[in-house]
Image 1 (cartoon, one colour):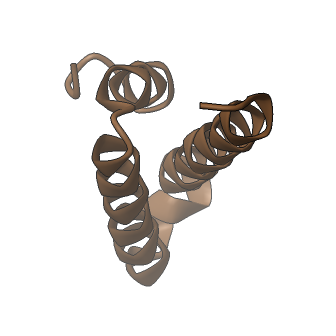
Image 2 (cartoon, one colour):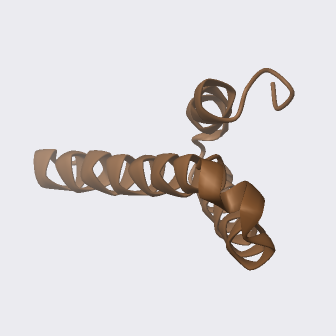
Image 3 (cartoon, rainbow, N blue to C red):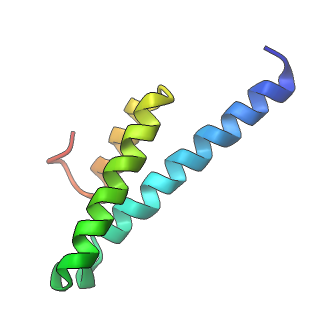
Length: 75
């Protein structure tokens, strides 16, 4: 693997992990608890982002993000 491919892979990994982090935080916002549609959509987005991370081989990192943003019930 050349250096450019390695850097591109790292950028892609970081993109998907940050995406998961954003959606998981959105899912835990106080207003998400009062707006069922927001909570449902944020939950779907979080799950989709998590599955993308798993598909890229980033399950451990994704679980760490969920444990930090959602809490220990995910780990």
